[in-house]
Length: 286
Image: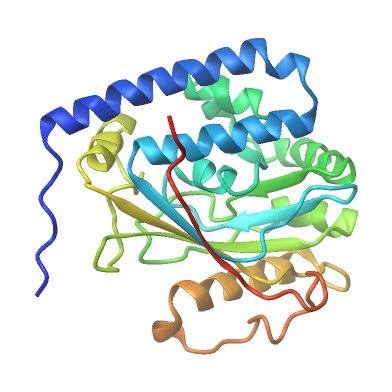
């Protein structure tokens, strides 16, 4: 049995923490001073580079498979399983997105300001009547050509299961006729086992979760972009079911086997002849 590597030393953890603090400060300054003066494309380039460096500081190596959605005149919706507060930055390091988040995040110290500046759309999850307002905002963003992302589980897991997908916030994709991109996300140890260190679950505090991440010598993050699903002829529950099946087939193939709703069974909105790719993102230079 392969023994796991020992935790990082206190010195390494403090160095990472100090670098992380400076990086967040740099992000806040950019959001306040630069973002209001540049266009969306320039903001997206900065968001992508900032997110990639955040992962490098935390020793998170990122690899992707499949074809990430591209920005343009026509918007798209991205749905992913949810494990950690890191999920947003893992996805943004590949393709900056406008996330749908619970309203409490807006008031988080530092992180709240960053996600607001990135164009996050907020919803009061405890207020059913706020869903209609949020859906209108999402549809307007899609019709404006934005890439909107959400976590339809509505909560996080430790990465060993996929919870039920709530379909209410998928209605804008149906109404706007924009494709839906399911994304399977997981964090792995060096030996290929699921790494629960980034999991932000239960009563774990943000600080405790961050300490777990800092203690790891390295974490491997994997993103698998499944074939896009066309919403035409589907209602939001069917759309959620197809997305759930696709992500399940990627994350737990041995457990679930081939199930209905895999890429061979769904209408594909990706470019004709496109093939999955596997890209490893190196740590950016300081």
